[in-house]
Length: 96
Length: 96
Image 1: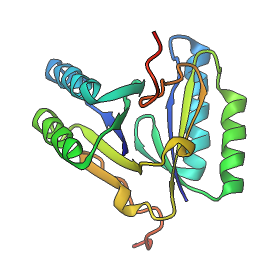
Image 2: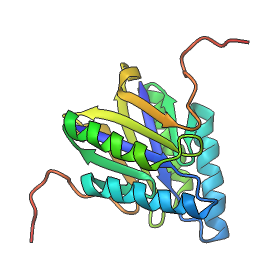
Image 3: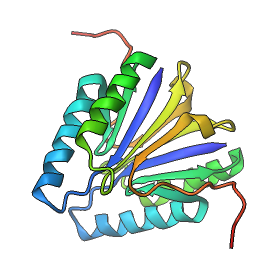
Image 4: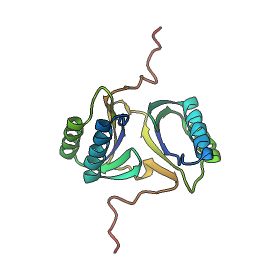
């Protein structure tokens, strides 16, 4: 299924900037960055649970915000992009 | 239906900052800001078409990026929030 992860991390401090880098890194391991703070992740339920656990370990719940949107398996006609930086097809063939 | 609007606007110029303010304002008219660049909008198909038109009028398609995610009518169990700044229930009763 496609899960959208969006986040706001308070980066007014050095520790905040560190958290932002950690959140980005964790999301990059399972998903595709489509905007600065938006990742699309094609995961199963176990991978999603794992992803949430990892993110919860690094964020500060009093300052940062994470949102997860489950778009299911038939998501291709639910997502529309306009403008710069269109994302790649996560499940499409790899053309070299 | 719930439509998630996420955006990246290139704010390295004054015109970019103006576009960002315009995009925020248009989204605020039909939705709830849940993160810095993420709005949740409960709209019907006509309102969504109108929203897209308005946003397309203000963004620079070569520099800015807009994404629309359709979460349907039964979206409450598809959205999860962790951390700071939880959103309000857009369709819930207004308690004064």
